Length: 104
Length: 104
Image (cartoon, rainbow over all chains, first blue to last red; front, top):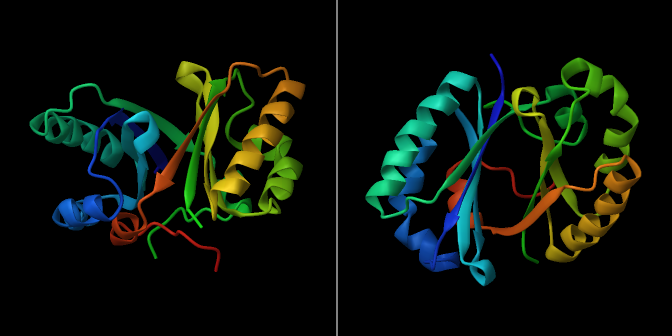
């Protein structure tokens, strides 16, 4: 099993902050139940009209499956310019720098 | 205090994996002591000749200071093409999806 990081970025004019927390609460609960997900950080940059997320998955298969699912979901929101990049997490180095790499 | 995510990506022909863990062990220990750092995931994609990292900082000032420091450090390694992007972490949504947002 290869611990896999997924980086997602797309153009967004909001909602951001607490408005996003309200608007996406149900989506976040759904993503929390995603098979193989360890965690997701929700990212936003209102100054640059960008939003996205950084995900850690327990294995590459879960990450690849999620890319397909999330591309379709973003498309249903009208977001078709999403950048998605997959990386292997270097576990030894990441443990030294306090990253959580596994579900409790 | 604004929990801030920093995304870093650059071209790399290695080392990757356990070779990287050995080569960068001392650097990782130094980064672990960085003021304001909550965690870093070390990322690598040997197929695309890419490497980088995703960092979470407790506040924007620490992240901004690190960008300056790390740009100089990467330059000393001959890495001058690094992409660095800063985002605010949406804490409410990220907590729902299990992200660790604070140092223990």
